[in-house]
Amino acid sequence: MKVLNVLFKITLALSLIALGTFTIMCFWSWFIVPFGVKPIGFAHALGLSMIVSYLQHRQKMVFNPDVVLKRPFLKVMKDRFTWNFIGLGMGYIVSQFI
Image (cartoon, rainbow, N blue to C red):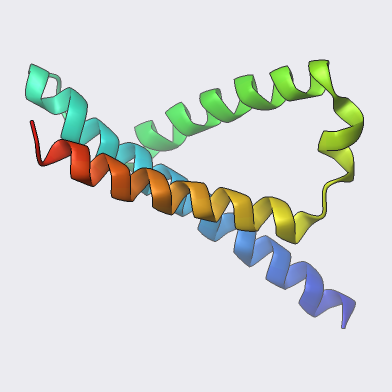
């Protein structure tokens, strides 16, 4: 049972990484490419995502490490999935006006 729980968490985390990377690729193509910059692929988007995540996590840990470390895993994943989908939806709507 513990193995399934670990596999579920790993699968959830990997799918969140893929969704976040896809979100960055969409934002880049909607808002940066029109300025004449080349589109980016999955690897570049993943790198940008890692940089932003690192900087955000570092800032949260400095201000309140206890809250960051004690949040339940599934709550963190749900919040991140939700914000990716909200970001994609709002980014798409905004891109329609450009």
